[in-house]
Amino acid sequence: MNQRLTNMSEWMYQNQVDISIITSTENVFYLSGFYSDPHERLLALAVFQQEEPILICPAMEKEDAKASGWSYEIIGYSDVENPWEMVRKAIDKRVNNVSKLAVEKEHMNVERYEALSELFPKAAFISAEENLRKLRMIKDEKEISKIREACALADYAVEVGCSEIKEGKTELEILAVIEYELKKKGITKMSFDTMVLTGANGASPHGTPGLTKVKKGDFVLFDLGVVVDGYCSDITRTVAYGEINEKQKEIYDTVLKAQLAAIDASKPGASCSEVDLTARNIIREAGYGEYFPHRLGHGLGIGVHEYPSLTETNPLMLESGMVYTIEPGIYVPNTAGVRIEDDVFVTANGVEILTQFPKELQIIK
Ligand code: MN
Ligand code: MN
Image 1 (cartoon, helix red, strand yellow):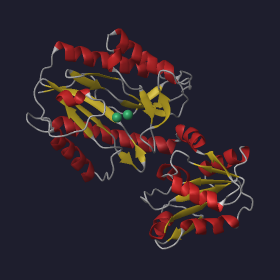
Image 2: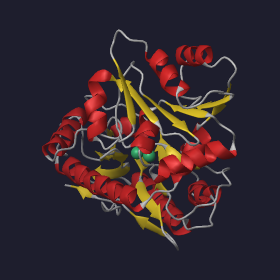
Image 3: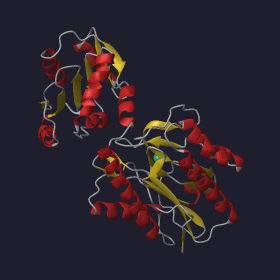
């Protein structure tokens, strides 16, 4: 078995878990190497302490699963078969007494929980999520190289976006060119819906791009990410279109100062809260504390939001191998919104910054 499945089985042994039934696209991919989004159909990976794992997927995806390198049993079910019955039969061949079952409690829906409860009426259900989050938090070299590639493409995407900024262009027009250029490079998926925001829209941390036109004197904020072989990047850059006023400059400089300080504070042994507060205190001292309403950053990898979570209260220590974002922002309604986000990788004595697009204020003429 691969190292990830071995780690999972080890955790199951320590916690006396008889079977883990993993059903989220991300965790099935992490453990099996097979990436599938089967929509409402069931995708599941059954993991045992000793026995070989089983992959359960729609019959039409069986060949894709084999092609992905999965070499253990695959149960492919048709649209007229009950996958749970087939799962039960396959499990019966491996274990008899199921008293503890691990599932992703946050992901599993009630219907599936009821189906599993009927199959294993005596089993207690525990959460597999916390353990998987911890396993996924430390990246191996292959994962880092994919994230690195995804970050380089995110840099390129911002570059394309900046070159598209022209008087009268809408947020959506610029967004469309960015994604078109990435598709030409073979990118099929973005980490999340690309954000191009300008004017008052940029002052909302989770704004929605629309028909607002760029105009001189406004910021344009890009927040986007690219998926490479199942791994995400996530970058934000805020650039000025034409000359901006002193207030806008002050906001930009404050965010940049906070972002650079948080990068400096990032090293193995520093806590997530320490790093968050390093940036937050700079923003507070500049008088913008109330306009920085979100955490400093989040882990990323297969998921665009993973562990660790960089909040001002998380005592978790940074460790080498973690990958996370550093993305302070200041959003003053009707005035300006600035966020600067990099993806960093914790090394033995600091961090390597994976997103490289320039951060000094860019003024697009
Ligand atoms: Mn982002
Ligand atoms: Mn982010």
